[in-house]
Image 1 (cartoon, rainbow, N blue to C red):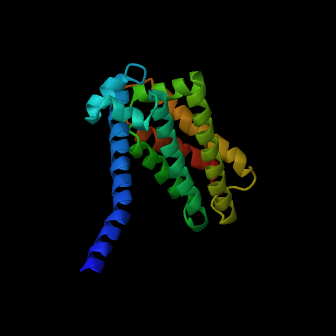
Image 2 (cartoon, rainbow, N blue to C red):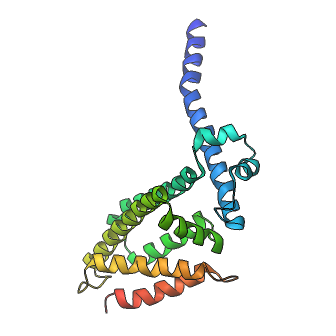
Image 3 (cartoon, rainbow, N blue to C red):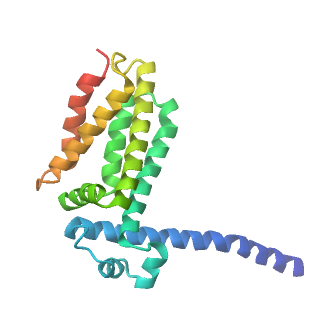
Length: 211
């Protein structure tokens, strides 16, 4: 009986850190989801920490346990995007259809973080004007570039991407196409960004694929 009780106590001690981590992750995600919703409707600069905590149904102290500032929250969003690119990079060797993989990934990012004109303008505006956010944004941009280049190099090896243009140039051009599309869309209303991205990628691949 004593041994059984000791085993149960040991199991609970092992499980408790796991539960704490899950609760912490859930709370953090709730804060990020509430913040993104508010950024989408109000814009980044117009959204206050008080509005975020109210929408997430948490205390202000809880918010600061996770994010010391609102800017730190934005950096965390960029870090989540970076994690997605890390996963894409890991999938490169096994990719059989490079075009399909990059197209689906582009749409996955759009679904992962809701896009609205205000939030698109806020993201790019902050990246250009806020040093801390700009530094993290630049890191994600370069991580994205290296990942896309690796995927395009793989496409060249398996005969799906033209080889007369370096993959580095093709990757940079793809980023230009995507960012340009998002920025221009950010100054429009009532149109579907997914459709814009599909058109952009269709045109891009006419030039990037093998003849």
